[in-house]
Image 1 (cartoon, rainbow, N blue to C red):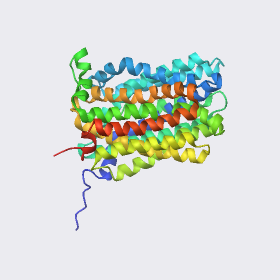
Image 2: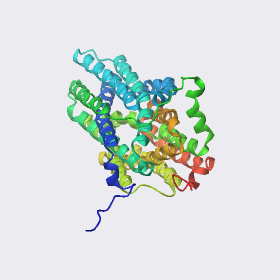
Image 3: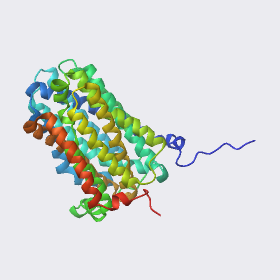
Image 4: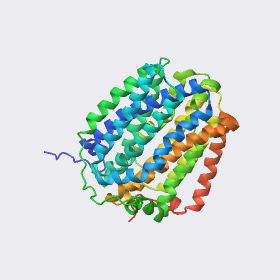
Length: 411
């Protein structure tokens, strides 16, 4: 008899055999769907209530405040405690935020302040969830599978980012009650799945001190390659993102209503999902630094096209391509950070990385809203796209280790 072939350790079949990882992937989809649905409904309601680009930007700032205040403790929590349970507690907080919005919507008392309060709770939950979630993946798969696992994990997030806004657009019936009720059910299902995931590593027993909590920041600062990689995402998305302004584009420029807003919010994730499937099957293995820089440059160019477009389907295509480019950047950066970081520091390093991501996303929304209040939505997005292209050129010179880096693990 011919022997049955054994799949290579880095094969896609071997990755699907990792049951604990697949459970984490499922919880990421369920929780992500709920979060995206909630955020789309809340953003539309904020703009309906106030008609203010400034208030849309303030939503991002409010979500960033917990990142600024709690990132260091969140990293220590991810290294000290059972990571699936940390994620579960974070999702319980998301559940509280969704129930908060559902209750005020049912009572007809939804206000600007209520939406800001829910945004703060969502930001707090994300601050604790992201470092625990990112640092959990390497403990569930062998090192040779990590690049594929990161791509597949990101694909789960993109499935949520596609389905959540689209579902919110369909379910939104003027008050958001149906959206928030569906999100509540999804979060409960995610919590049930989370409690079945093991954490295969010895948690730290060290008492929390300021010195230990700052270890992640010191680690990144001491390695210029990592500093360049994570800061590139910070400054590029900080200036180049357009998520906060999508309600304005949907209502005033493209005139497509809440259903169109859901599609616009989902478009980057469609491109990102397609790219994540490509990267899961054929991961980037060489010239990783150049791929990182060029993907961010492509993201900036797509934002330029989106800002100047007055046609819905061209805008959708630009956003989809921006998501595909961003996915390359995300997978390369996260895989590099995880493989360069000792296992007992992944939570704290992941927390710093999450702070950079949070700063780029939430502060980016605030920057977009503030700039749009002065230059208009189109001017804000076009300026951000140009700034992203200039940033890539600057980082190519400031961090020469990046374009020179060939592989994730050097010999």
